[in-house]
Length: 613
Figure 1 (cartoon, rainbow, N blue to C red):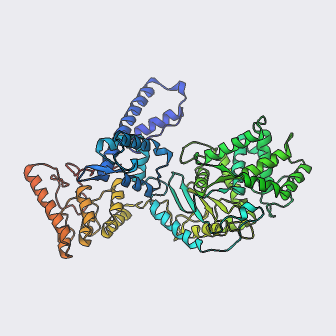
Figure 2: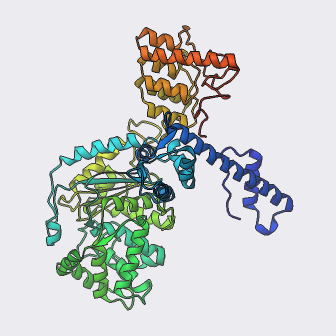
Figure 3: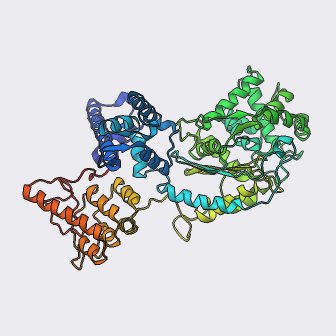
C-alpha cells in the first residue's frame, strides 16, 4: 500500500494504525483494519475541510477593512508577494482566474481584477481552490520563514557586487561581444516556490555551458548512470575546459567540460529516440528544459547558433579527436551531434527562468512551481556532485573550497547556484574573469556564504555567527516572547499579524509580566494597540509585576490617542459585562489579571481572534 500521511494532531493510536497498514500487503488487510482505516480517513477529511474553512475565515478577518467589511485584493496579493508567491505562480492560478471571473461579473467596475474589494462570501470562494498553499504562506511554513528578511540581505549583496567592474565580455563570437557589460541580475527560487529577483532578470541570454548539467540530467534519466558513464568519466580534468585531452580510459573526464558535453549530446542524439530528426530532438530537449523551469518561457537564438557553428574549430577538433579514440556510440553522426550541441548552447532564457531550474535541482528533481517530478532524486544527486567538483571550469576546486556549493557557469556570464533542500539561484553578469566565470557572479557566491551558513561544511549548530534563514523566527518559547514583544515595541503590525497567524499565544508576557499590549501602549503605537485588541482579543488591562496596566503606560508617556482607545475599550468591556454578552475582545469568564499569559480569550472574542493552526 502507498504510505499514508497523517496530520500532526493525529493520535498515537491512529499513527500506529497507519504504520501498521503501511507495512501490510493489500491482500492481508483484515476487515477490522479496513473499517478502522475508513473511520480514520473520514475523520481526516472532516478535519481537513474544517481547517480549510477555518483558514478562510481567519484570512478574511485579518485582511478585511473594518468600515467596508471587504478585503482589498491588491493588499492581499501584495502580502503574498512579500512572502515570495507571485501572481503568475501556477499554484494559485485558480484564484487568479476566479478574480477575473468576479471582475467580469461586476461589469469591470474596478480598474483591475487584482484591485477589487471583495465581501466575505466572494473572498472565501475566490481563494478556496488554493487555500492550502495560501494558508501555508501566511503561517510562514515555507523553507525560508522570514523571506523578506532573507531577500533584504541578498539585495545588499547584489548592490555590493554591482560596483565590481572587473572582467571582459566574451568575444569569440560577435553576438556575445555586443552584450552590455553593465547587465547584472540575481534571481532566487526556493524549494517552496518563493521567488525574488533584482536587477536585469528579464533580459534573455543564451545558456552556453549552463546547459551542460541539464543535458547530463536528461541523459541520466533516459539511459541510466551505468550507460552514461561507460562513455563519460566523473573526474575533474585539471586541464582547460576545451583542451584536447581524455582520461586514462580514453573518455572525456566529466560532462561539465566541452568534450563531455559533446559526448552527452551524442548519447541523446543517438541512443534516445534514434528515430527522431535533428529538429525533433531539439524540441524534445527543449521540452525537458521547460519542464525543469516550471513551463516558463525558453527561446532560441539562431544568430548565436550560426556564429557558434562558424567559430567551432576547437569544438570540432575535440569531436574528431574523440572519434579517433572511438568514444562515440555506434551509428553516431558527428556533424548532427555537433549541431545538436550548438543548438542546446544557443537556447535562450532569463535569470528568472533559470532560477526555477536551479530550484528543481535543489528540490531533488521536483519542480517547485508545477510540483511535477521531472528528475529522479538519485540522478539529481549525481548532477550536483559533478557540478560541485567540475562546474566552474578551472576555478572549480577554489569555488568548492570557498563557497562549498554545486554551481555551473557559462561564457554567457551566468552562474547557476544550487543550495540543496533550500533554494536555487541564478546570477548573470557578462564580464568574465580569465578562467571564464562571471566576476560579479563569483563574488556574489562568496559574499553569500559569508552572510548565510549555506556552505556544505558550515556547522549549523555550533561555532558560527552566520545567519540561517531556514530557522523559524520563533523556534523556542523564550525566543517567541522576545520576538512578540519586540514587534509590539517597534510598532510592527505586519509582524504581529504573522505571529498570530502562526498560532502563537499573543497574551504571552516576559518575566516582569509585561505583555505586547504594555509595550505597544508605552511606545504609543496606536495601530498595534488596536490590532491587539480588535483582532487578537487580548485582555485590555493585564497588570505587570508593579501593578501597571497598558493604559497606565500610555498615560505615563503622554500618548493621549492610545489612552482614549483603551478607555473606550474598557467602557465597551464593562457594558458587555453588564449585558452578559461577550462581543468585545475580553473574555468575561477570565480574570483580567492575565500577565502570565493565561488569560487568552477563547469565548466571545473579537472577529479574527482564533488562531490558524
